[in-house]
Length: 131
Image 1 (tube, rainbow, N blue to C red):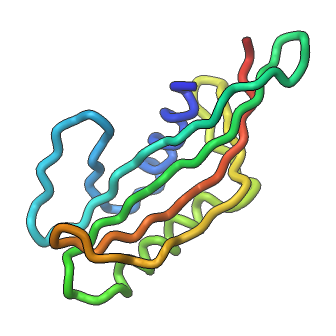
Image 2 (cartoon, helix red, strand yellow; image 1 turned 180 degrees about the horizontal axis):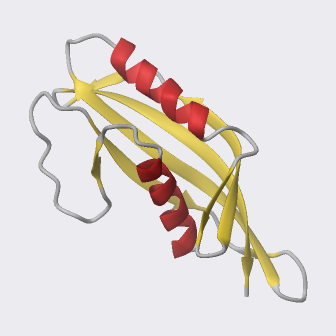
């Protein structure tokens, strides 16, 4: 499963979105007034696809965009659209021979949170994992 996490993180980095990244379980102090992204993978259970050698899983990759509060929502929405254009339905992300296929994508309504305008992009995926 770790390779699915790495595949999405690497694809986000390779996308060149120009955002600092607050990685999971690494101390990150945001710079006031500078937008950034948090990347979180939420996998589901792994289930057997066959009796042989393959398991299946799916899950959600969440990209939480944080932009300065009270500066409008257009920048965050524009960046969300840019990200969604890279992670199109049917596209694949891979890391070290483990791939995941994007099955759905959405953007939630922005909300104010702790001095930031937070917009969440959710990428649904499906992956087949060798045992």
